Length: 620
Image 1 (cartoon, rainbow, N blue to C red):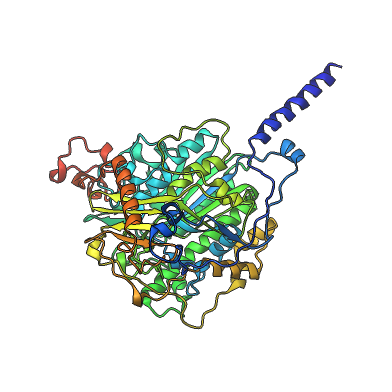
Image 2 (image 1 turned 90 degrees about the vertical axis):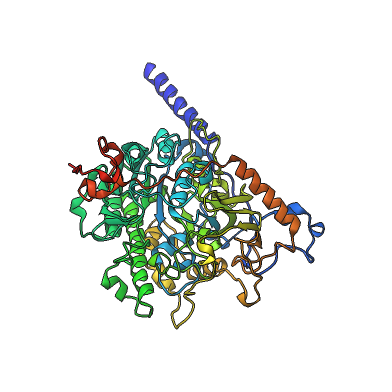
């Protein structure tokens, strides 16, 4: 009798607990969505005429928050209410893959046939392709935005990059993404590039929420010898936690990052939630003496590419794509793929046209990395997960890299309140997973008080004030990847390790779906011959990004009231901005003082006096 009562109580308690969990579940009943098969960027968002009175300021400023999808393909079935009660899944594993300096036109799913990226493409087609996804135009500001959920002008990280000998880092007052996730029961691990401060131990990844880190601290390095050259200094930069990873010398950085990621997946308990941040070196340039670091065999595959630099770049990108496939395959083998969220993003636009000795492509967008144009801050990105109810579609809602922090915390289904006051990010989980209208209506691209550059998008409209390099990189750069006999190889995508992994859990990628999605995300810009000049270092420029994503036509004179509205909004952001925190490079941070190794030099400088020191502090 006693046993029966206890058993009844246990079952009741179990069901009650699961009922509470079910009430917090994000599953909703499926809704019927109309199918849209055409996305074009060459149609105006305004009614006939040029005056605000004909459309109203609010409607003129509003963006298109719709999305498109392939009808009835790969929808995740809704569980019954009974299953909701008894079978709640554990928190999802979160795999965030951050490519470095990848251009808009460097991925196959955006329309280029030149460099196949079958694994990246397969995940994109199986998930949600993010058509209006924005990052910061350069590395450190983007990474700070990802980690904090704040625009860099609110953390002092808005200007340029952070150097290894610079005595600063991402402010320690900021609680960052892995720390939030750790509070929710996650184990956070990092592989790859940090670039958010390393001058003292407390700024390093393992002091900021990551249980482990294998990778490098500065902004770039040689992919083979792992040395980094910057600000006239040179030294080794490859670590396991705080230890110098001498044993990895000669191994490709992309391969190291891949192997370490796979090892983490293999050894991680499947039932415990994992946050794995994979921050690739590829396709960033290496050191100036060998900027496009790839194996000759990888580059030799691309006999169709006659330009030497682009061919070397293709080899780097090919290896990055291979890495993505290996990681997805490892998740499948470990039984983690069914409960994973995979995000793929670039950190900024591509360094095209030889910028940074690189050969990326943002075609047909304007500008390059570290410019205020779409080519600098419009990023290639997607999210894939079985948790997404409306998969295999194009998402048109605006999304900024700051949005990942609140979005992923929501995805992790926190069981307790998380203090997120003061962040700029917006929870976009329902927009991504259910195709609901997104909450984001504007994006602050940047306010850089040192360079006197600011840019803002509100709805379809973008304001640009000031530019970099005196306008030297304000043009349009190829290659387009549409020339020549090459055709898009759908079978290569379908036969990729990533696609095979998806198929193993029941997600197929039909050829018709692939080609339709690919057509939808291609940008159409018309001819640049009829463009209206813009000189943002002389006067403010205004563009309608929906109808003119390539920023051919400055319409500031035609729409003065819209320009005024955006200018006032920018002024409001400026009132909350903090000064850029950049500091001069300190000669005491020179690796020559530490066995020619980049280190947390601020912990070793007692008794040193700038460049005059003769002390040699050797690393143990």
